[in-house]
Length: 89
Image 1 (cartoon, rainbow, N blue to C red):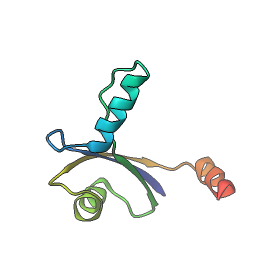
Image 2: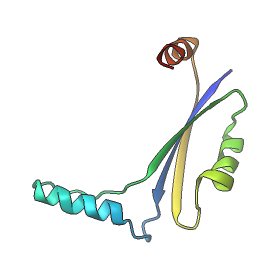
Image 3: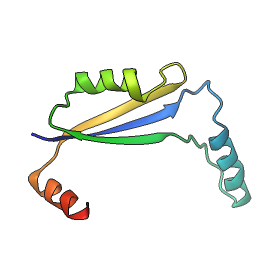
């Protein structure tokens, strides 16, 4: 069965996030106080994904584990979801 993985990657708390800080300052000008982290989201779809494989892919290719943290979800894709996705492509 085809699986969909969503990988969320963010800077570690001790790493300077200049994009996040710049956005925080811009939000203050709009009277919004917020802590902001700027990261990235990666979506993968494959018949071959397992949690163990995905974790290894993250560590080997997607994430700089010295400066970034990550989390992921891995879910089965229903046939209806595949048909909707193919229509959009």
